[in-house]
Length: 112
Image 1 (cartoon, rainbow, N blue to C red):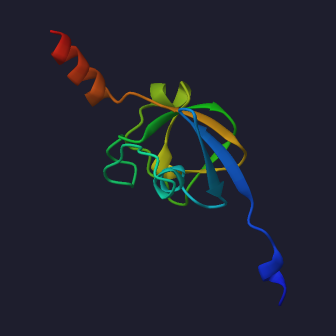
Image 2 (image 1 turned 180 degrees about the horizontal axis):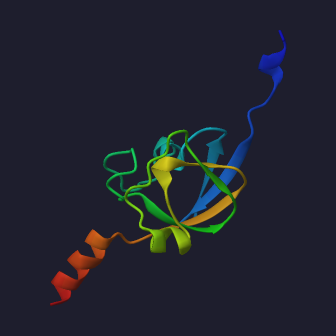
């Protein structure tokens, strides 16, 4: 219809480590964070590296079309971890950045 441009795109709010970030419908969580100058580690942006792991504390997400969650094992998925590059908001969200295995290993090496 000619007036379809009047239809508003839903915007959700994502709270990420204390920052409130608007997320447009269909926009990946990583894209929204970067667009608003919120540093969120990322590498490949396609689900392989796992640097953008986040813990979903509240809300609903939906995987992007053809999502690849290769960087998450079954235990991580069951514990609420998601990849910010591979998910979009379906409601308001509350997330925290999860420590990657590489970050944990580096911390352990520094303490040793």
